[in-house]
Amino acid sequence: MNSANFELDLLDFQGEPIELSFEAPMEELEWLAKGLESTGYRPADDVSFKVDLSAQLIETTVRLHGEVEGALSYECGRCMRERRFELDSSVEFVLMSRASWEEAYGDREEIVLSADDLDVSFYEGEVIDLRPLIVEAVVLELPTFARCTEEDKASCDAAFEAHVGQETVEANEANSIDLRWSKLREVKLKSNDTE
Image (tube, rainbow, N blue to C red; front, side, top):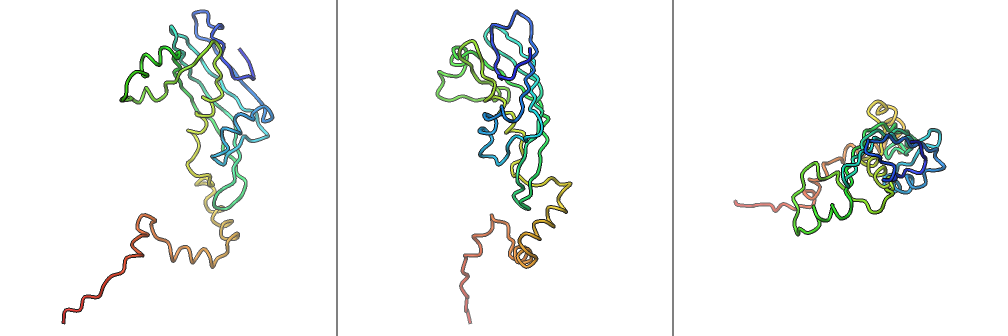
């Protein structure tokens, strides 16, 4: 099955797993760009975004696993240059029908989740919109900070220094302190004269 709408129709299952292949150019990925807004990353406009999934329906539970490929653009938070992040990651999700999910998780005041439970969500209806799951999978693959890779560290440092100036770099290095200890600078010590 090949589609650009990133949806899974449960009526397509005929007892066997099905293979899903989605591909879309940047202009069709507004939903991905919106999902990435808070991260500083955005879909690169020169490559298509691909998702290949294998889906299996077991009673009312859908198991999805596969690969997500594409490229994202971002501005390095240190050197301010436009950079690229190549995305090639595996995804795995378990979706239960809403009724099954509520039966398993909904009635308890306190739930102890195992690692396997963290990838479990629920669906409603006969058509599952896979876009929120794909956004979640992409966000989980992103580095915490939008910065140049280790391979580009030397050029990143040089561009940063050129941007802010050598004097500022030296002042930052001279005043650098682990932020966890910064409150110690506010401590005033009393002189203890015991003569």
